[in-house]
Image (tube, rainbow, N blue to C red; front, side, top):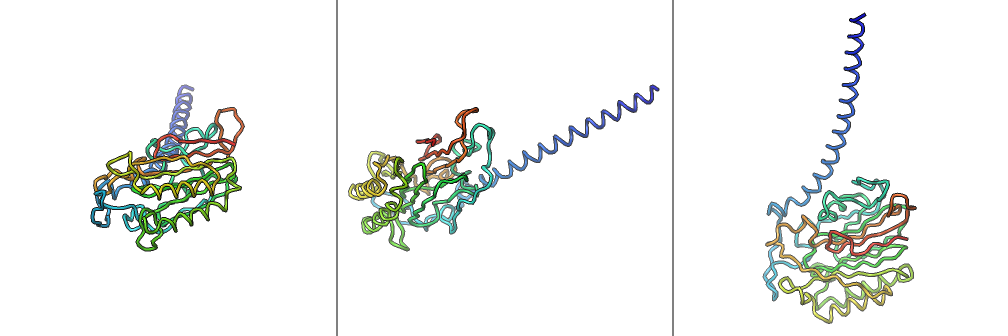
Length: 300
């Protein structure tokens, strides 16, 4: 009888151990899987962090800048191809039942990490990108990193978002914000944006503009260029744009560019956002302009 009880206790101990081991192993797999997915994000910025990014050489301009924001500047941000909205999981979140917006591993990694999501449209690669996305029942993001002189335009409403990336200089197409080309570029922006003016009713617009690298009080572009850009967005969207200015970093002197929130912009859309635990899910979007926290959040 004593032997039977001892054997029974040993069997129970072994079973309990196996259950705990199985659970621990599954948790470990989950952790390793999550770490692996994040690892690829950090590897993404390694070429600049390690100083191995093959930047194109340029002569210093009047502002003593080493390189202008252009498609041939750096393969890290200006590579061919793009990511489109394809639906899928919402990625890393620690509180999916309460809030569903993308949660990065750290606040300054939001754009770097959301660019790896399958539903994100990468605005970085193509010169003069103009894109309209109609909000539906799938999550969506439009994001860009590596800004060092280019301009970003977002126009949003409860119906959708218009996103645009305007190059500072593009020698291949001459469609950029240089004095000789800006009128054509702004005209194209106006035409593309005005198509969605009715859809943007009740919404808002944003322009992210570069300043001089060594003078945050002086715009990088001439006054007439800035004025033409602001007027185009206002007329085509029906909204006075919110102007956000950023100080562009010198690529060759800023190895951390592309590893934090500097030079980034993004719009995140969530069709089932819950502001509070017991609140009814609503559609919502957030706008980030080189910021760890959203500069705008709307629920509808």
